[in-house]
Length: 473
Image (tube, rainbow, N blue to C red; front, side, top):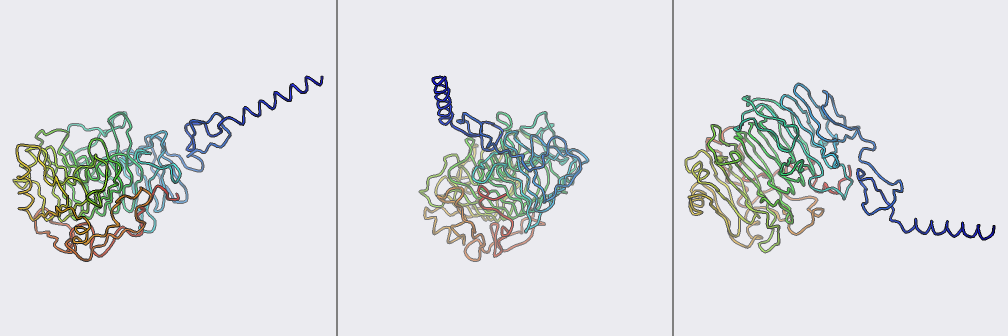
């Protein structure tokens, strides 16, 4: 009897010892604190759904209120005839495990009308410190406006969801004082969403004071449509900041891009990437969107700074595009302007597209050609249309001469160390004056004296978050 008792005690001790050697943690891969090395679930799993209102499938007409937090699970749709209204100050989280994505279908509307004091925030469901680019699918807004491709479907969404029509005045709702953080994800191989994807959105749609941060693909991408925009920010994007395609014809004023130095997409990342379609084919509708008063801040604060080699051009104009870009400044990208096909150069040479009164700063590779025209032809066009070049390697002197402050660059900072109070206002230097709105393509825009996105007023103050990775939501 005594021997038996001792044996049982020894076996129990061995069992306790074995358990104590196991790595404890959460073994549920759907939890936000999942530990793949854990051998035992000790009950400490935390799920993004706890305390949240889940949104999934096709939504009814409804209002999201700021006293609750919401979780997008999978592909969430606002279908034709339905309206999703979001109160100022509301937070909507995207689920990583199910690649949560919000799609405003043709005929549906989203009224996301935030305020400067209470912006509406779409962000990652992961906790502070764990958020990263591509945590969820972002916003997709589709409309009945014109575009130039046969029955286009939005990338990544299955089954196919189509966009386009013939109503350039179509109204998909309101996006005002809205932030979209960590959106844009590969939903299927080679099919990605962006932070904000717009497919044939009409000019009846309002988009003002919209910020995208740390997206897994492009920041803003227009696939056709005619919607206008004002006060747009693309911050820390993986791929392009402003991507224009499929016959887009809208007007945008006051835009900012700030690129992060250490990552960029393998396809090549640009501040502006502009196409007419997926190839160089002739279409009846050209991409002719207009952008004025944009500031593009590349990843390089100093000429010798190490950056991702996938950062490419300030302006990459391709495949018969004819966008107009005016009164803007681009600095800190390794390359300047590329006109990548003969058709592109011809569209600018004959005045269909216009590049006017811009300032381009690059230490080398300022002008590039991919067609029968030469890089010298591109440069000649640039200089003949009131544009200027700052091509020195003393970035500090160039930045000062423009009237910019160095704290608006990432420089060598980590993603959580960007300036908490960047100085975007410009009150002296080349950018403080010299804007020109005399060209017919700039009719209807707000006339200001400064070039770039800022004069003496910083329109980012009060609603922007410069460190969303660590923000307390």
